[in-house]
Each structure stands twice: as C-alpha cells, then as structure tokens.
Length: 340
Image (cartoon, rainbow, N blue to C red; front, side, top):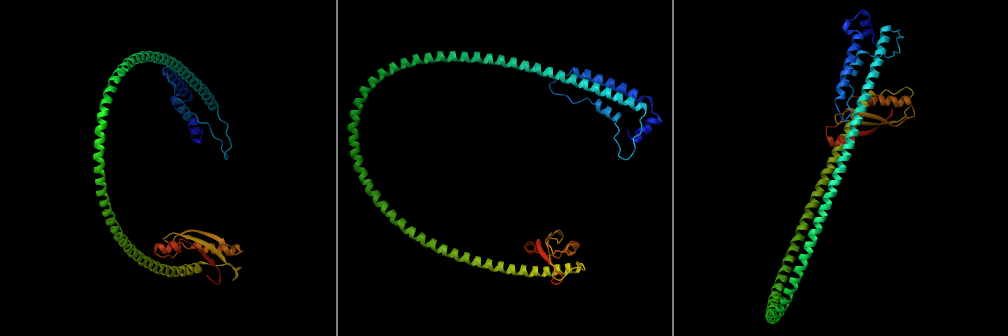
C-alpha cells in the first residue's frame, strides 16, 4: 500500500469498506461468475472474470523503495494478503474448471464432426456406385444403338457408292470443259494483271524517289535546327554557369567574413595549422551539421573552428536554388589564421 492508503486504514473506514466485507462480496461475485460460466459451452477460451481486476485495485502489493526503509505492516495487512492468496487460488480453480469444460466441448464437437464426415463419405460412395451403374446401362444402350446405326450406314453406303460413281463420271467430263475455259480466262487475266503491275511498279518507284528526296531535305532541316538549338542551350548553360560561379564567389566571401568574425583561435595556434570542416546548410541558410574532415593536429584549434562554424545561426546563401544546391548545400572550408 502507498502512504496515503496506510493513512486511510489507520484513521478508520466505514464498515462496508472493511476487508472482511469486501472479501465476502468478492467471494459472492466469483461464485456467480462460476455458475454463469458452467452454462456457457464454447470451445473458445473466455477472458478472466472482471472480479480479478477489482481485487487487484482493492489490495495492491507494496513495491520496494530504494530510499525509504521498510516499515512493519500491521496484522490487518497480513490478513488481507492471506485473503488475496485465497482469492487467487479460487480464481485459478475457476479458470481450470472453465478450461476443462471447454476441452470437453471441443472433444465432443470433434467426435460429432468425425461421425458426420464418415456418414458423408458413405453417402458419397453410395452415390458414386449408383452413378457408375447408370453409366454402365447407358453405355450398353449406346453400344446396341451404334451397332444398328452401323449396319444401316453400310447399306446406305453401298447404294451411295454406286450413285457416286455415276455422278463422278458426269462431273469429270463437265470439269474438263470448265478447266479448259478457266485456263483461257486465266491466261487473259494474267496478261492484264502483268501490265497493271508493271504500271503500278513504275508509279511506286517514282513516288519512292520523291519521298526519299523529301525525307533527306526534312532530315537536313531538322539537323540544322537541332544544331542551332544545341548551340543556343550550350551558350545559355555557359552563361548560367558563369553567373552561378560569380554569385557563389560573392557568398563564399560573405561566409568567410562571418566565420572570421566569429572565430577565436587559441593562443597555441600557429600560422601553419589548417582545419577543414564540412558544413551542411538548408536553403534558408540554417545550419544542418558540421563535420571535421581534416584535423590540424591540435584539438583546441579544431574545437575553436567547430565552435565558430556552429555559432552562426544563419549563413548568407543565394536565393537562387540552383546556385545553392551546386555550391552551398554541402561545402568544405579551411580554417587557417592567415588564409580565412
């Protein structure tokens, strides 16, 4: 119990809030939950009854304090601990009863499912046997019908064969006459088609030559336009690069001036000492990070350079985004007493 709970216990509480009254109420609640749980048959394990959470709030085990010395608890607290232990035992028994009931229900369902599956298997087997017998009867009827139809076809085939031979002879003579006429017509059409194809070929060759000449002229025009556009872009890029370089040099000088004003190198520094820092900025000029990339060999000198770089809350940077990304997003600067 906390200090506040001990004070309430020692100062006196109403009778209905006494540990004995609470214990009796909790036992009645557990018995009611157990009776209700026996009537519910479910294979799904139910969560613990809400009475356990109420019990935990009523009786809280004190936690050891690393500062305050342990104080001897009164007899009433020992009684409450014993009641707490008994309640836990009863709750565990109730939980085991529920689990056993759920296990029995699950086993019963499993047996019923097995019996249902066996019955379904028998029914399917009987159905399959009936279907097989029906198919056998249908196959036999189809065989007899096929035999009768085959005999009828043989008779009709003999009659048709004789008629076919008579018709074939007449057809052969008519076919020879038709082929003779078709051959003459074919040769006539072939000659006409040859002359038309020759005319179309010459016309196609003429059009192809014209198209090739037009394509060559168009290709030359496109090449000239592309070369002019490329030269124009190259000139614009060169001018833009020169402008960006000029602007970057301007802001690099401003940054060096700001860092020079903020830098106070130690008395142990010499003119030969050089520290290189990598500075990362945002487009607004705000500092993102500073990293030492080359040490001077003097820790105090390196730390003074780092302090100067970090002391600037905002660096002067160009408003043009391309110039910033090219030169000021991340850059390296040297700290030297003579050159900065």
